[in-house]
Image 1 (cartoon, rainbow, N blue to C red):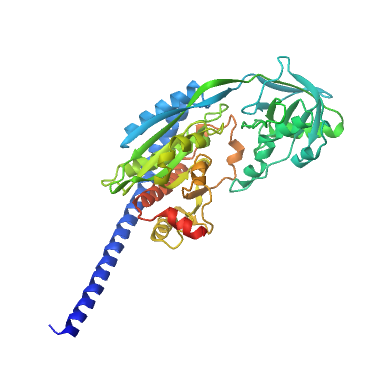
Image 2: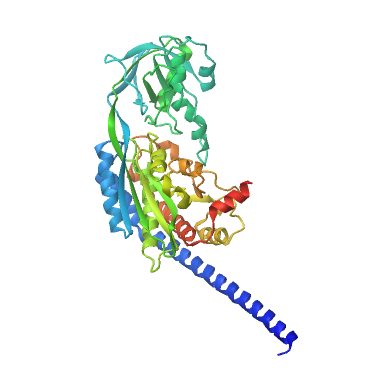
Length: 471
C-alpha cells in the first residue's frame, strides 16, 4: 500500500476510535442519567423512609447521647439497615461523658412572682440543692454582656435576651451560637452566679430550646439554662420597670464512663470498592421531644437513599457508606469518627450530611472544582424536576459530623433545605413525628438517592479537582 494511503487509513482509524470512545462515553452518561432519574422517581412513591422515621421516633423516642435510649436506637437502626439490603452493617461505640437532665424550674420572686419556662443547657452544672436566688442583670445584646466590666455581675444572674432572626438557610443560628456556647463562661468571668439566655429559636411558643454549652477552662462553671422566648420577653418588660429577682433550680449530673454508638451500612462498589462516598446524619437527639426533625429525618433520608441504590441490579463503581453518627449534640461524633477511621480518610472521595430537618430541598452546592464536569451537569438535570436548583457557590461544608473529615481533605457536596420554620421546633419538646410532611421527606430522599448514586458511579477525582481549584 502506498505510504500516503497508509497514513490516511491510520488517521481514519484514529478518528473512528475517538468517535467510538466518545459514543461509549455518551452512552454511559445516558445510562447513568436514566438510572439516577429512576431512583429519583422511585423515592417519590416508596415510603420506606417515612416508615423508618415513624418507627425510630415511636419505638425508641428520644435518644440522648450516652444513655440506654441511644444504645437501643443503635440496635434498632442496625436491624433496620440489615433488612434494607446493605452488604455490611456495623455498630461501633466510643467513650464519652454523658450529661443527664434533672429537675429544672425557674420563677420570678419579685416584683411579680410567676413561673418561668426553662431548660438546662447540655453540659450545665447543677445549682445548689436549694437553688439560686438572685437579682438579674439583663442584656438585650450579647455584645453588651461582653462589654461588662469584671465583677460587675457579682452575685447576679446574667440574662441575655438577644433575638435570633428567621432566615431561610439557618445562618442566623451559627451567628447566635456563641450566646449559648460561650455565654455562661463570659458571665462567670464577670462574677455572675448563673446564666439564662433567650432560646436560640424563632418561635413564640412557651417552650425552651435545649442545646449544649462549652465551659472555658479559665472561668468558674455556673448553672446555665435557656428561657422560652415569651419568658425572655417577660423578663425584658419586668426589667424595664425595675429590679427583678429570679429563683433557679437545675439538677443535672454527668456520668464519666458512658459510651455512644455510631451505626454504618455499606454497599460495596462493583469496580473500585476501596473508594467511598459517605452520606450521613446523626442518630442521637435531645431529650425533650422525640428527635423527629433533628435528626431522625436525616437518618431516614440517607438510609432510604442507600436502600434504593441497594435495590439496583448492579452496584455503582464506588462503595456507598451510610453513617448514623452518635453523640452529635454533645460534640463527640465527628472527632470520634475521624479518629476511629483515620486510615480510611484518604479513601473517602466525597461526603455529605443531612441535618436540617425534613423540609424541601431548594438548592444544592457542587463539590469545589467540579463545575464543568458531566457529574454536575447530570445531577443538575436530574434534580431540576424536583424544583432544586444548582447554587453558584460550591460546598464549603455539609454538616457538623463530617466537618472533621472536611478538615482532613475530604471534599463535600451539600443539599440546602428550606429552614424558615426549622428553628421554631429545633431542640424543643415539639420536635415530634407529626411535624413531618411525607411528600417533603420523599423529595429529600429522591435528591439524595440521585446524588449518592451519581457520585458513587462517577470516575471523578473530587480531591484533585478541589486541590486544583484551590491553588
